[in-house]
Structure formats: structure tokens, C-alpha cells
Image 1: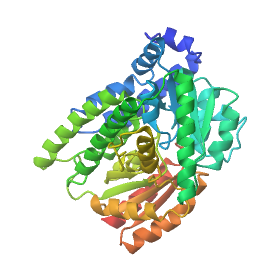
Image 2: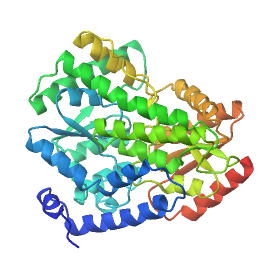
Image 3: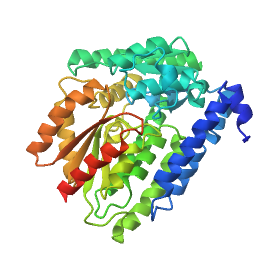
Length: 424
């Protein structure tokens, strides 16, 4: 079946037949997981529309921006400072993929024992399935894990890749290293866009991205209410779409959603019974359309009230100081914020343990589900210390390790149901 976007996708060199199959599966998956929910908020209609048009209208917006001379920069990690891209009049989009599509192609050049997220974004490129990757003038990688940094070496044969080095510790020398990397990134973005970043433009970009973080912070705070005013699936979708959507439009729409949530909270209304077990997700990020585990959890009688991940509070917890008056002060503020991110790539990482416990208490979570992608060594190994910290706080934890396939759904459902029943 033809669509209004076929010509655009063809110009982007997508495999039209394979891409159509992906969209068909995505549409059914979305319908089963999201549209089947009862009593969804009015504000979610916008998110439904964005997801429906995620490879259509949003890609057309990117092409229109490119036609006006703007450059599109794709990223895989919250360490990459979007403020710098926006200050250079660029557009930044997330490239992480959460589907099995393209895995066969990826496994021809990557080890099978590579995490699903890496195989997915490499497979999407090799199979010509992702219009975001094909729209990019630059793809920015980072060294948050060995698998990703080596995959970028291979990915560079197929796309223009630039890699930022992420420190592995948080000493003064590591802070200096990251500042040097941010300065190097600024130079590269100015080179790609042809635009010079000024103090005024960078300050404006910082305020813009902080505005988006603030509205997501507001959403997270409202989720502490009982009964929970929004499902974990819908909140996850909000966070996922924040990486794709226009930041000004997104902030406005999610502000309206939060207004509706406040009305729900005041009226004592929720999406789940007041006595439903409240669970928090922790660990690896969940990229679109990785909704398997949240669906299993909320189909088992629990409600998800928060996400401690890069697609969650790890990305939104801290703001950039907006008071800088010089380029050095503003860049230092960007560096300071990102160095507070508690990714599992850091050692030691005790602040993440503290943040998880504080977050679980603040959200009145009855338990935590620690999610790890298969072969993601940093989060798999850190799960041991997370469980120990939660046990000391008398908060039960269930560790789940899985990938993007549907083969383990029944096994996961059995484990999650037993965990929910234990909490009850």
C-alpha cells in the first residue's frame, strides 16, 4: 500500500518493502500495548499521533529543515550535549533502536554476544530501515561501553561518525578530559553546520533544553501520587518521544499533559486501583519500540511509577546552570551537569545507588525491577550492588535480563507475576 511518504523514503534509500513490514509490525504492536489501555489521558492523543508519524511527518520536518540549510545530528547517548547542536542551529535526534528488525544483517558483522541495542542500530543501518539515520549529516557515538565504541568503528564504514570519549571515573582529571571533549565537539558541530556558536545562542539553547527537562521533572513528580495518574507505558512513551520530537512543541504538549495529570491527582483518579503494587524500573534504557517488559509488568496487576534510566530520570534529574555570562562559564555548566549523570560506565558509582533508593522512596515504590539487556556487562554487574542497596532500604528487587525478542515473554510473565504477588 502506497503512502504520501514513499517518495521521501525512496530518496533516503530505504528498503521500501522491508520498511513497510517494520511499520506494519510496529503499528500492531503499538495497538496491542497502548491503545488497549482503559481510561487514557486526553493528552496522550498527541503522543499517539507522534508515534504514528514518527517515520513520516517528523522525517519530513527534518528534510524541510535540511532544505533550509540546517544540519541533522544523530546521537545514541544522553552525554552528548544537545545544547551545542541547537546553539549552532542544528537539529539533534536520538538513534537508539529497540526492535529485532535488522538483527540478521547486524550479526553478519557483529558477534552474536553483542547487546540487542547495538545490534539493532547497526542492523537498522545495514537493512536500510531507519529514516533518522539516513537523514543525519553526522552520527555521534560515545565510549560508554566497549561494545558501542568498537561498533562505531564498523558503523563508520556506512555513515559519517564522530566519537566522544566518556571518562570512566569522576576525579578532577576526568572532569578536565570531558571538558576537552565538549570543546572538541563544539568545534566539530560548528564545522558541520557552518555556524559559529555565540554566548547568546548557547544560553538560549540551554534554557530551551532545561525547559524540556523541567516539564519531564514535573511529570515524574506527579507520578508519586496515589493512585498513579498515568501508566508506566504512557510515561515511558513520553520520555522516548522526547528524543525525536521538536523540543519547543514537545515541552508545550507535555505541559498540557501535566495540567491534565494535576486534575487527575486532585480528583483522586488513577489508571490503576489505589492498592495496585507500585513498581519502579531501573537499569538499561528502553528505546522505541521496546515496550515488552512494561507491558508484562502492568498486565500483571502492578503499575510502573518511575524509570531510573537514560530514558527516564538519569536524563532529566539535573539542569544546566543558566547563569553563565561567558562561553567558558556556559560550557563549564554543561560539563558539570553531564558529569552528574550516574551511568554504569563509571567506577565507583555509589551515587547511582543513592539515587535509586531516594527515587524509590520518593515515588512510594513497593519494589524495583532492575532491567538489563543481555550482554550489557556494566548494568548486569551493577545489579548486584543495586539489590544490596535496596535490600538495606527494605525495598525488594527483581533482576530481569532479556533482549528484544518475544521468545521469553511467558517466562518473564511468570517471574513478574510471582514478584508482584510477593509484594502484595
